Amino acid sequence: MTNVAIINNKIKNYKKKIFVSGDKSISIRCVLLASQAIGVSRIYNILESADVLSALKSIKRLGINYKKKDNYYEICGYGLSGFKTQKKIQINAGNSGTLARLILGLLINSKKEITLVGDNSLSKRDFSRVTQPLKIFGANISSNNQKLPVKIVGSEFLRPINYEEKLGSAQCKSTVMLAALKSPGITKIRAKKSRNHTEIFFKNLKIPIKILSKKNFDYIEVTGGHNFKSFNYIVPGDISSSSFFIALTLLSKKSRLIIKNVNINNSRIGIIRILNKMNANIKFRNKKRYKGELISDLIVKSKKKLTGINCPSSLNSSAIDEFLILFLVAAKAKGTSIFRDLGELNKKESPRLDIGVKFLKKIGIKVERFKNNLKIYGNPDLNLDGKFTMQNFRKDHRVFMMTCIAALTLGGKWKIHDKDSIKTSFPTFIKLIKNLGAKVN
Image (tube, rainbow, N blue to C red; front, top):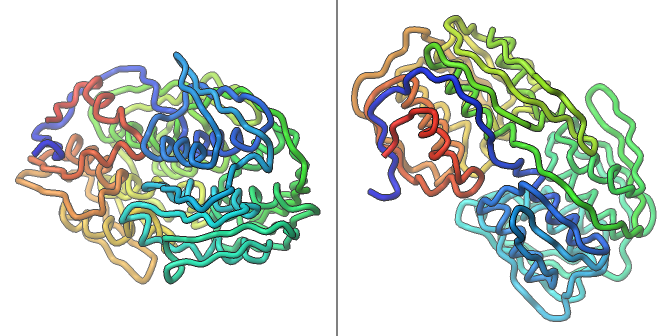
């Protein structure tokens, strides 16, 4: 039972300050961009999770050396043509969809065939959304029925493209942006609103980029063929990791939490906007701008009277990794909550929409589903008494952590399988909840 978390008691009230791990999306982008820079980059507070370690191992397979120092990583890049691809190699993205998709964009000028593989979960995910535009750039790509393994051979005759990203996927948009670095000329992108970390990085690194922001879409132009210098970067705390502690505090009694130095990029704080519409009153303190990203402390207090929400689908992309924990909060809120157009959740590490519905029914919450829309009937008096087991969720780290928060706030005796899944994104999760007083075996 070493890979099972046992939780038999609710968490008691607490008043604490915590730091969460470094932002996963930014950590991976730091690694990949440092591998393309000229010179030695230093990255502080990098998230040392399985996904980020997979990124480091991948660039090493491609001839980029890195060293771990006392409190930072050094990565030595050789520019846009710095990958050593003189022979066929295989790189393993593990469980990371971000790494797998983004690194393909950097391989469109590879001289030899490179095979990209991943774990069982990643191998079930769709890659056509990135392989199709990369083929237009000029890369030669084949796949296993649009899934991993993907084989790619680059081209010496790359051309810029016009690309429309309709899904609100930052991974797809970023893959094309990274490929555009390697292609002479101007690549033009019309992208549905999504996370903009890559755009901010490009601006900070003085990569030629133009952005015209409209209500629902961004128009982006990237001029390729320009090398850029190495950089130093301090990775801020991850809002997605913070979301579990936000929910834990909201649903606990007489508790208060300060989460220090969290990235509150406007394209990432959908969860804060949604929860505040549900009467949560989460506050920002000590806001500051760091290399284009907005950083803040978060102040969270327990809330007796959370209310249901008719959630605007315009907030979906900025909360795409947090919907499982939002479903849990909706289960405890007064009234009904409606969420729409959530099909993208089933294209994550596990079919999160399907699993979320099953979980809510498991804990006695009425849910109505029509295609990718949900209506959740909240129960403010929800209190669990009995034995529960959570398993068969494809080792999805966010399912595991959401279930822990449910156990600690709703009660019951829980066995939650695949504890090791947290290594993917948040290895210190259990240690942190124990520091708040949770009893987890």
